[in-house]
Picture 1 (cartoon, helix red, strand yellow):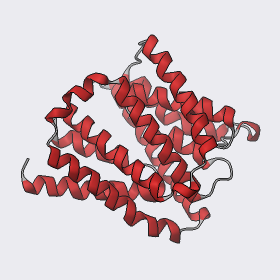
Picture 2: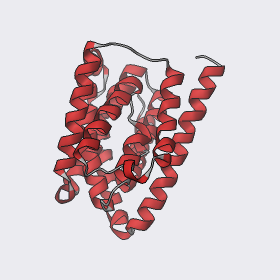
Picture 3: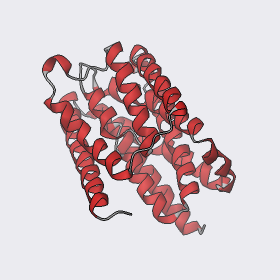
Picture 4: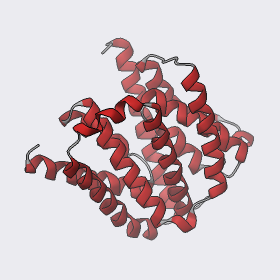
Length: 248
Protein backbone atom coordinates (compact mmCIF):
# COMPACT_ATOMS: atom_id res chain seq x y z
CA UNK A 1 0.00 0.00 0.00
CA UNK A 2 1.36 3.40 -0.99
CA UNK A 3 1.95 6.14 1.63
CA UNK A 4 -0.73 8.26 -0.06
CA UNK A 5 -3.28 5.47 0.26
CA UNK A 6 -2.36 4.92 3.91
CA UNK A 7 -2.78 8.66 4.55
CA UNK A 8 -6.20 8.61 2.89
CA UNK A 9 -7.37 5.63 4.96
CA UNK A 10 -5.98 7.24 8.10
CA UNK A 11 -8.03 10.40 7.47
CA UNK A 12 -11.13 8.31 6.80
CA UNK A 13 -10.59 6.43 10.07
CA UNK A 14 -10.25 9.68 12.01
CA UNK A 15 -13.43 11.05 10.40
CA UNK A 16 -15.51 7.92 11.00
CA UNK A 17 -14.22 7.59 14.58
CA UNK A 18 -15.22 11.24 15.11
CA UNK A 19 -18.72 10.48 13.81
CA UNK A 20 -19.05 7.44 16.06
CA UNK A 21 -17.52 9.33 18.98
CA UNK A 22 -20.09 12.10 18.61
CA UNK A 23 -23.23 10.00 18.10
CA UNK A 24 -22.07 6.48 18.94
CA UNK A 25 -23.20 5.24 15.52
CA UNK A 26 -22.78 5.35 11.72
CA UNK A 27 -18.97 5.57 11.59
CA UNK A 28 -18.43 1.83 11.38
CA UNK A 29 -20.80 1.39 8.46
CA UNK A 30 -19.16 4.20 6.49
CA UNK A 31 -15.70 2.81 7.23
CA UNK A 32 -16.43 -0.74 6.09
CA UNK A 33 -17.76 0.62 2.80
CA UNK A 34 -14.52 2.51 2.17
CA UNK A 35 -12.28 -0.38 3.22
CA UNK A 36 -14.06 -2.86 0.97
CA UNK A 37 -13.55 -0.49 -1.96
CA UNK A 38 -9.74 -0.52 -1.56
CA UNK A 39 -8.79 -3.76 0.22
CA UNK A 40 -9.43 -7.50 -0.18
CA UNK A 41 -12.43 -8.66 1.85
CA UNK A 42 -10.51 -10.60 4.57
CA UNK A 43 -8.10 -7.71 5.11
CA UNK A 44 -10.93 -5.18 5.15
CA UNK A 45 -12.92 -7.19 7.69
CA UNK A 46 -9.94 -7.69 10.00
CA UNK A 47 -8.94 -4.01 9.76
CA UNK A 48 -12.55 -2.98 10.40
CA UNK A 49 -12.64 -5.16 13.51
CA UNK A 50 -9.37 -3.64 14.75
CA UNK A 51 -10.61 -0.07 14.28
CA UNK A 52 -14.01 -0.76 15.85
CA UNK A 53 -12.50 -2.44 18.89
CA UNK A 54 -10.05 0.45 19.30
CA UNK A 55 -12.67 3.16 18.68
CA UNK A 56 -15.28 1.69 21.03
CA UNK A 57 -12.68 0.73 23.62
CA UNK A 58 -11.21 4.22 23.77
CA UNK A 59 -14.68 5.80 23.77
CA UNK A 60 -15.77 3.57 26.65
CA UNK A 61 -12.60 4.51 28.57
CA UNK A 62 -13.07 8.26 28.02
CA UNK A 63 -16.65 8.08 29.29
CA UNK A 64 -16.13 5.22 31.76
CA UNK A 65 -17.81 7.12 34.63
CA UNK A 66 -21.04 7.15 32.62
CA UNK A 67 -21.22 3.43 31.72
CA UNK A 68 -24.42 1.78 32.97
CA UNK A 69 -23.01 -1.60 33.91
CA UNK A 70 -26.41 -3.16 34.65
CA UNK A 71 -27.43 -2.48 31.06
CA UNK A 72 -24.12 -3.89 29.78
CA UNK A 73 -24.56 -7.07 31.83
CA UNK A 74 -28.08 -7.65 30.50
CA UNK A 75 -26.97 -7.01 26.91
CA UNK A 76 -23.97 -9.34 27.32
CA UNK A 77 -26.23 -12.11 28.65
CA UNK A 78 -28.50 -11.91 25.62
CA UNK A 79 -25.57 -11.72 23.23
CA UNK A 80 -24.01 -14.84 24.75
CA UNK A 81 -27.30 -16.73 24.40
CA UNK A 82 -27.47 -15.79 20.73
CA UNK A 83 -23.82 -16.73 20.18
CA UNK A 84 -24.39 -20.20 21.67
CA UNK A 85 -27.62 -20.70 19.71
CA UNK A 86 -26.10 -19.69 16.37
CA UNK A 87 -23.05 -21.85 17.07
CA UNK A 88 -25.42 -24.84 17.25
CA UNK A 89 -27.85 -23.84 14.49
CA UNK A 90 -26.02 -22.56 11.43
CA UNK A 91 -28.99 -21.12 9.50
CA UNK A 92 -28.05 -18.14 7.34
CA UNK A 93 -30.78 -16.05 5.67
CA UNK A 94 -30.34 -14.49 2.27
CA UNK A 95 -28.53 -11.16 2.21
CA UNK A 96 -31.57 -9.19 0.91
CA UNK A 97 -33.75 -10.50 3.74
CA UNK A 98 -31.09 -9.65 6.31
CA UNK A 99 -30.71 -6.07 5.05
CA UNK A 100 -34.46 -5.49 4.85
CA UNK A 101 -34.88 -6.73 8.41
CA UNK A 102 -32.08 -4.41 9.53
CA UNK A 103 -33.83 -1.47 7.90
CA UNK A 104 -37.32 -2.29 9.18
CA UNK A 105 -36.50 -2.78 12.86
CA UNK A 106 -36.16 0.89 13.92
CA UNK A 107 -39.40 1.81 12.13
CA UNK A 108 -41.23 -1.09 13.80
CA UNK A 109 -39.90 0.07 17.18
CA UNK A 110 -41.41 3.51 16.60
CA UNK A 111 -44.83 1.89 16.05
CA UNK A 112 -44.67 -0.03 19.33
CA UNK A 113 -47.01 1.07 22.14
CA UNK A 114 -45.55 3.11 24.99
CA UNK A 115 -45.60 0.07 27.27
CA UNK A 116 -43.23 -1.72 24.88
CA UNK A 117 -41.00 1.27 24.08
CA UNK A 118 -37.25 0.56 24.21
CA UNK A 119 -35.72 1.03 27.66
CA UNK A 120 -31.97 0.33 28.01
CA UNK A 121 -32.33 0.21 31.80
CA UNK A 122 -34.70 -2.77 31.63
CA UNK A 123 -32.85 -6.03 32.28
CA UNK A 124 -35.42 -8.08 30.35
CA UNK A 125 -35.23 -5.81 27.32
CA UNK A 126 -31.44 -5.74 27.60
CA UNK A 127 -31.28 -9.52 27.25
CA UNK A 128 -33.74 -9.47 24.34
CA UNK A 129 -31.98 -6.71 22.46
CA UNK A 130 -28.59 -8.27 23.19
CA UNK A 131 -29.72 -11.51 21.57
CA UNK A 132 -31.32 -9.70 18.61
CA UNK A 133 -28.33 -7.42 17.99
CA UNK A 134 -25.84 -10.28 18.26
CA UNK A 135 -27.91 -12.27 15.76
CA UNK A 136 -27.83 -9.36 13.31
CA UNK A 137 -24.09 -8.92 13.81
CA UNK A 138 -23.43 -12.60 13.07
CA UNK A 139 -25.70 -12.63 10.02
CA UNK A 140 -24.82 -9.27 8.48
CA UNK A 141 -21.63 -8.07 10.21
CA UNK A 142 -23.34 -5.10 11.92
CA UNK A 143 -26.09 -4.68 14.50
CA UNK A 144 -27.40 -1.68 12.60
CA UNK A 145 -29.88 0.90 13.81
CA UNK A 146 -31.60 -1.59 16.14
CA UNK A 147 -28.99 -1.07 18.87
CA UNK A 148 -29.06 2.70 18.33
CA UNK A 149 -32.86 2.83 18.65
CA UNK A 150 -32.69 0.76 21.83
CA UNK A 151 -30.28 3.13 23.55
CA UNK A 152 -32.20 6.24 22.48
CA UNK A 153 -35.16 4.90 24.46
CA UNK A 154 -35.49 5.43 28.18
CA UNK A 155 -33.96 8.25 30.20
CA UNK A 156 -30.19 7.87 29.67
CA UNK A 157 -28.39 11.11 28.85
CA UNK A 158 -26.10 11.45 25.81
CA UNK A 159 -22.93 10.57 27.76
CA UNK A 160 -24.49 7.44 29.25
CA UNK A 161 -25.78 6.38 25.83
CA UNK A 162 -22.38 6.79 24.12
CA UNK A 163 -20.44 5.14 26.99
CA UNK A 164 -22.77 2.19 27.54
CA UNK A 165 -23.30 1.50 23.85
CA UNK A 166 -19.54 1.58 23.22
CA UNK A 167 -18.99 -1.00 25.97
CA UNK A 168 -21.68 -3.25 24.47
CA UNK A 169 -20.09 -2.85 21.02
CA UNK A 170 -16.73 -4.04 22.37
CA UNK A 171 -18.43 -7.24 23.53
CA UNK A 172 -20.33 -7.61 20.26
CA UNK A 173 -17.30 -7.23 18.01
CA UNK A 174 -15.27 -9.52 20.27
CA UNK A 175 -17.91 -12.24 20.04
CA UNK A 176 -18.13 -11.75 16.29
CA UNK A 177 -14.39 -12.34 15.98
CA UNK A 178 -14.67 -15.43 18.16
CA UNK A 179 -17.51 -16.75 15.98
CA UNK A 180 -15.68 -16.16 12.73
CA UNK A 181 -12.47 -17.83 13.83
CA UNK A 182 -11.41 -18.39 10.25
CA UNK A 183 -11.22 -14.65 9.71
CA UNK A 184 -8.69 -14.28 12.50
CA UNK A 185 -6.40 -16.70 10.66
CA UNK A 186 -6.14 -14.12 7.87
CA UNK A 187 -4.98 -11.40 10.24
CA UNK A 188 -1.39 -12.09 9.29
CA UNK A 189 -2.11 -10.56 5.88
CA UNK A 190 -2.72 -7.20 7.57
CA UNK A 191 0.24 -4.80 7.53
CA UNK A 192 1.18 -4.14 11.19
CA UNK A 193 1.82 -0.48 10.36
CA UNK A 194 -1.71 -0.20 8.98
CA UNK A 195 -3.12 -1.80 12.12
CA UNK A 196 -1.22 0.60 14.39
CA UNK A 197 -2.37 3.55 12.27
CA UNK A 198 -5.96 2.34 12.53
CA UNK A 199 -5.79 2.19 16.32
CA UNK A 200 -4.19 5.65 16.64
CA UNK A 201 -6.60 7.21 14.12
CA UNK A 202 -9.60 5.73 15.95
CA UNK A 203 -8.35 7.09 19.27
CA UNK A 204 -7.73 10.54 17.76
CA UNK A 205 -11.16 10.80 16.14
CA UNK A 206 -12.87 9.63 19.32
CA UNK A 207 -10.92 12.13 21.44
CA UNK A 208 -11.75 15.04 19.11
CA UNK A 209 -15.45 14.21 19.31
CA UNK A 210 -15.52 14.48 23.10
CA UNK A 211 -15.56 18.29 23.21
CA UNK A 212 -18.36 18.47 20.63
CA UNK A 213 -20.45 15.92 22.56
CA UNK A 214 -19.99 17.95 25.73
CA UNK A 215 -21.19 21.09 23.91
CA UNK A 216 -24.40 19.43 22.67
CA UNK A 217 -27.60 19.25 24.67
CA UNK A 218 -29.46 15.97 25.14
CA UNK A 219 -32.28 17.33 22.96
CA UNK A 220 -29.88 18.13 20.10
CA UNK A 221 -28.19 14.75 20.47
CA UNK A 222 -31.44 12.79 20.30
CA UNK A 223 -32.76 14.82 17.36
CA UNK A 224 -29.64 14.35 15.22
CA UNK A 225 -29.20 10.73 16.27
CA UNK A 226 -32.80 10.04 15.27
CA UNK A 227 -32.18 11.54 11.82
CA UNK A 228 -29.04 9.42 11.38
CA UNK A 229 -30.91 6.24 12.31
CA UNK A 230 -33.64 7.04 9.78
CA UNK A 231 -31.09 7.59 6.99
CA UNK A 232 -29.17 4.39 7.80
CA UNK A 233 -32.35 2.33 8.08
CA UNK A 234 -33.56 3.72 4.76
CA UNK A 235 -30.24 2.80 3.17
CA UNK A 236 -30.55 -0.80 4.39
CA UNK A 237 -34.11 -1.04 3.06
CA UNK A 238 -33.07 0.27 -0.36
CA UNK A 239 -30.04 -2.02 -0.51
CA UNK A 240 -32.05 -5.09 0.49
CA UNK A 241 -34.82 -4.29 -1.99
CA UNK A 242 -32.26 -3.73 -4.75
CA UNK A 243 -30.64 -7.11 -4.06
CA UNK A 244 -34.05 -8.78 -4.30
CA UNK A 245 -34.54 -7.30 -7.77
CA UNK A 246 -30.93 -7.57 -8.97
CA UNK A 247 -29.24 -10.47 -7.09
CA UNK A 248 -25.51 -10.06 -6.55
